[in-house]
Length: 304
Image (tube, rainbow, N blue to C red; front, side):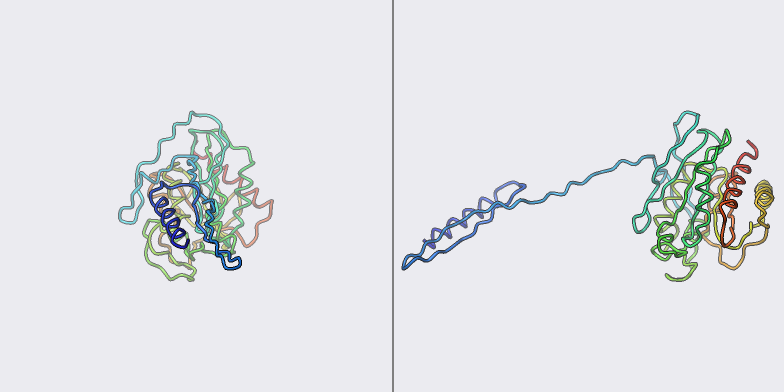
């Protein structure tokens, strides 16, 4: 009888080796029962389901320009994606990327398709969040005709979640852009620039968005120096107007090493554009946030 059991088991194994992949597997179990002097052996075959996990591909909601960009001498350059939308009003949002810890980074698009493109970023340093309310006000305020707004509430959601300046890799995202990037600090340092230019997924998301939309004007909110950095030419005029509308003084921003920063990078890849930072105060009231949102729309219309 034992020889018969062995033969049955060998036959089952042989059949299993010849079979195509299936969703169930056969398991042979030998059970021996002794009654008096007689021994009986039974072979039981159990079918065990095999769980199959399906892979789902989610198509992107918008074309990315990342495939058309290349890093040359630390500066991202390339041909922006071609937008085929007809001119007219627009109100929509989509995800442009994910943070290190998987949090979504989204953009809200409002205004006139084909109009002057204006980018506003509420948070780049996770513990400087006053710009969030300014961006939220811009999400509901009437947009002047001919203005095409792109509003990013935060490009550093992990930093916000942990109340840290850096992202989850401990990288200062405003030292990680691919213009004049340089090794700076180490993980844990407040200005750590990361292992290389645009090494972080958050930076990559903003690089791709910027290359796609080609903003003529961009404003990046920070805290808490309560000032605007001096500028010259047409950009200087915009900064001056923003100062008059909000009451922020124009004073140099000092105290750091300013390599791999966002606004100079944008100006380097979008010819003729203006990008500047707004250093808000330690706290911003609802009334002050509304004033800043109004100032954004005011300077956006300059030259249109």
